[in-house]
Length: 206
Image 1 (cartoon, rainbow, N blue to C red):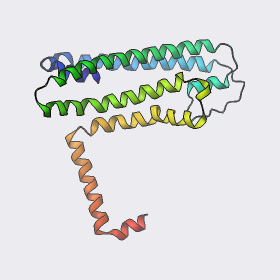
Image 2: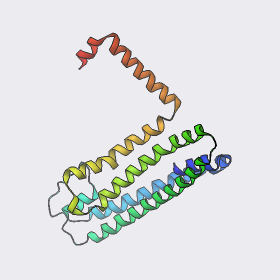
Image 3: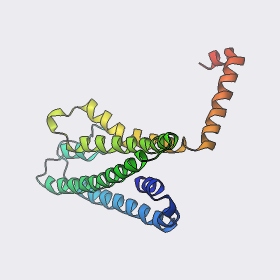
Image 4: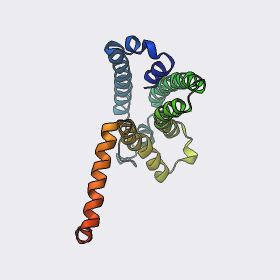
């Protein structure tokens, strides 16, 4: 998404050639391939760990740090290496995103039209906010020291990077679509008019 916005804002005349179907398929395949590789490595590593402190994970999914807490094996170094590899990969993506947005913001600030600058910022900032929320919470979940760990904090952080960001992501992008905005506005108008015209229905529904 950051590369798409970089090409659209910084090189608009070359957008059709740089962001063709082949380029999109290549980037999607790279993202899926990297995710699949990390998943296979972590799954194979965690399944090979002996659990000597029970099998109850204090989380709503099998998060790797929580599984490592249950293991008494001395071979955790392998999983730590995989975690470092995954974090390095994510950090590389983060650097690429930051570099792209630095160039985007420099190009936007040079725009003579205030309306054009506002439109560009309103398009880019939601994506940057979602990505930053995901990476910051994921880094915190996997790199925080054990001394600051608590069940409630672990649950909140895990919800942010595993549930909130994937849910917000499509909403942020779809709300930029005029047809989706019109559909949401129509549904909200219909619901409000029904509640106003028939308030007893709303009370009975509650």
